Image (cartoon, rainbow, N blue to C red; front, side, top):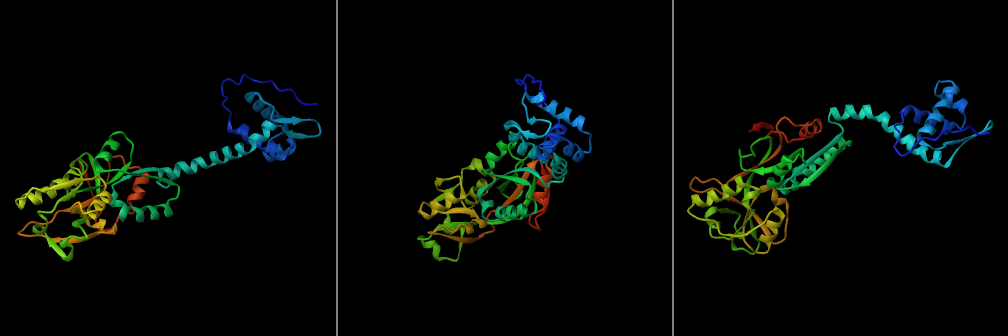
Length: 320
């Protein structure tokens, strides 16, 4: 004869202790109360009461019980895999908490400018994932101005930015990662492409493809200052946001473009890259790539990620 079950009001989801799920799973796997009690190092009466308590909390019968057999109901069978998963996740939580505190697990939201995607970022991501597979990396391509807005809204943890030397955004902690000279991207059909190196004088009259000032003001101003020092105003033919787009426009013959040396790795047909020589004491501007984050807000996962920074430019400062 089956045992009666008192059903509860199930309109409010019950809060059920892990202990009850552990006891349910033991009975479900043994299909025998005595063996399940032995497995749990308890006596049978408290185990029987615990199952009745669980069934009452759910408002469902989980087992069909007679004096000779114990069988799972359809509802009980549906909960077995879920109970196993729940208990496994509960058992893993202390380790996950310690791993997160140590930076070996968790989530890291990284924004990056397109130039970082040519070289630094792929190498770092691969190495980091191999060593810390439990850290979920969320990669967000965004220009510097968009990253600053995302920091203000708390949507990213850190960002890779491009800037002129010493001109990282204020209010952020900055770790400089690399320094690149600017090179010029030329249409392959340009007569200037035949020269191994160029000077600024060769380029002053050429139409310019450049990014809008709002996305990279320090580098934009440095390029314009170089032209102004030579007595020229740059003739901007087209603005574009992404470096890939700028190079594609150069390929189409729209003009020439000043790009970080790392962009050479973007081998677009119809484009050649040339280094420039400074002239009359005027140096060609350079640029730096930095990792930035809110001051005092470096998470353990971010600190782990920064350990992959290239050697030699490990310069950290508060740019407040």
